[in-house]
Length: 630
Ligand code: SF4
Image (cartoon, rainbow, N blue to C red):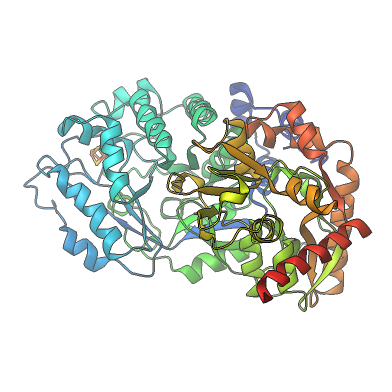
């Protein structure tokens, strides 16, 4: 993050830390300790909120989910655990797969499964559990089994971690929860969970999962016997592994619920201030983890709502059924309905975004009187948003890939932003075009067709196409049909989450944006030998620029909101001019790009649309409609 924003603090130490944060410098252990020590809680929250907004805009995510703990019988006896019992105990229970299937609500998007380490269940039972859920409810994604469970399966069934994970992935496991991490400290482990795996094995399992394309969460159980220093070290260990794999989606601080565990804590339940500080410090320390969750089941809905202005951008979900925290005395209602979550998020001044397990937005719930601006989450869009601060608090920002923006715009949920050119063409009766957009005059570097064949030999072939935008897809169609005379191509939409795509059965694949840049840096895509830059192809053919996106504002947006949007956009473009490389540095680093590569990349783009770009728009749309009507 790099921002010119100056915040005021009562604690001078926070001012020094904010300088580091806004210059994109990573925080040290001492910084973390100073953040915990501060009494300027509001200042801390404002910093974390700024960082969260730079990542997620005003969006707060939630998922319609249901939790299952199919058994509480466990071979271990962790001291802090109020959930587990031994086989034969009066409270012991075991659920059959049929029972689980009968309890599943077909309208949810995620089922979250964790449980005790059962002494007798067979491996096939776990495999069947995932497989049958997926077979019966194809739209529900399975997030299941902590690293503790995966390691238990590996040992019990004499398999490697990779074998366990691959077999579960093959039948439908999509992501893993982040439980079992507790606190990554040997001292704490020996005190309260000495039979359970430590940090080394926990991270080993998650590293392997990430390499297999199974992303995961990571938790931190705090408020028991750990020290503040151990909390910071925990966060730093997560940060190191995330640098290696990039596979963690969310960090979840879990406030310890003492229940009947007998564990002596400093203050019984954690205080709201401790909870809010921990959320904020997690956001500030974990610069490379996309999301921070306010886990309302343990925090209470009231504290979770405040946490949304202290760096959290996820509210977890509807949590249809939850047993572990309640057995330990959590006071939150068992069922916090979707409407309740939406109203908490609105009250916090944020935008509720319903998501899938990978944080792809499914629905957006705009509050009355709010104007939502889409934030294109690509490296080439940094100049639009680096200083985009609309003067009206009712103008909110939500990160959306172009295709999703287009769909939400059709539903009337999103009102402005850099719209994919094809979406604008389709909705131009509803939207006004501004003189800004994303255009190139030659190579785009991030709109690439990877192909086993040369252009002329692609007739009748299968091409996997990005699900992120329809403009590049239409550019591909125009090039195939009009420039190269190629017919009868079979297009198939790719999954929005790249780890879910298998490219091997395609003859060619079209990638755009950050994913195209990332793949290019990794040396290409699988065994595809030919790589074509579509904007370069267009330029060589038509001798004109190509316009990927145009800034558009819904005609019905109130005058003061429209003014605020245009002013913020023009301010951001003016502020970033000449500083694009510095501003895009962190983003480019995540894609593995060098400073020079970033310089070459970003200088390829034009953000103001002049007569050449407008002529190029007409020419391109003419070609597209000519294909459609042929
Ligand atoms: S925390 Fe997990 S592994 Fe430990 S006793 Fe409870 S259910 Fe078993």
